[in-house]
Image (cartoon, rainbow, N blue to C red; front, side):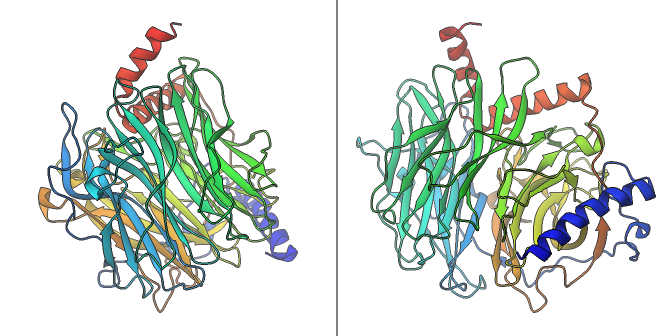
Length: 552
């Protein structure tokens, strides 16, 4: 991004503050025509035919892998998708997702989808990261489950996928927990035997890993995750390859937030100046008011050394619930998503309830224009702030245009037997004025697998092909319990999914001071506890064992 564009972006953020003073806006987005001079929002019907279903019938046997007492397996249910675009052949997309989700953590395995025509058609294949996919660990045992899929491309077109592969409850006797990486040098047609970055038994559990190839050097590949151990610590662990994945340096902690605290949602992002950052959530469990803070660490030497954490924003998510029944929805709370743009731009999005004074989550966004060193105040960018919005994904075009996708309940009804949900996309050239488009829906979220809440995944994905944003996501089907969910993609259209096709044009209001009263704190704390219980298999048993080992 040139200096003139940076200056324009900064000026626009200042303009938002002035607009709020003139119009008397509060802390959320405005949707009236007075804020932008545009007509009221139009309703766009579901895109229908342009959507492509990516996933098919499960390739795994119904009885493969292993269940635990009380486990429920949702066969044919796909959740938690991620996608990457080949930089030397943008028509080549590789997606990955959890296949056959378990109610209490992980899935039968991970499945890879491959497209060679911009996402219009797909082939799929299981990958050997669990026993269902034919994988074994280095000690000869089988990983019963796999989770947290992620994929990246290096500048020379080599693809890498990563998995948390495990067996048993967290840190229970006989449990195993590993981070595995597999690569493909032929556009995803075949994949290498996985490299084991770390393997733990009952002493630790590895969770929420991501992988990123350095956008400036095809030899450097980075993996990062959190590692909970029996002493009550949850540091961020990091491993890197400097030879294109042929070998990996030993995994090591790069940040430990201390006893009873942990990191989660670590994500490496490569910046335009050649540096990399780790964007993550730090959860403070040392008091009765558990909180989360989004932070970033910078490295200017490809991960050899790291800066001290820099605070991005406090995370005040209270979680998502069915507005009719109160049933929990397992969303992307406490898992910020990040993307880099040109000229030192770095953008982070997450769920946050600050805009409704703790009543429900909206979609928060903050920007850095100096490679993550300083950050703008969070603003709400979902266009209907009166309803819950959740699980955002973010991407940035080469010209600095921002794109964010998310779910919300604006079309839900009072019928308690359905939870009507839509998937939306919003984009902006200045970070202030946003144009929204409808991606998909309405669909019934009540049909989703239940994994400590209705579950489509802790994250979805948003990619870029040229000047088009490409959403890659999961939604429910109308086929009942035999096929609850599938992966979908919206390939580039003649009119790209971007600001050129305006459906709404909403000016966000300037941020206001957060009133974090006692009730608001309790809701944030309750959501952190719910999130950890859902995220970590056997979390309650782990908490009991930890308290016995490390009494207060």
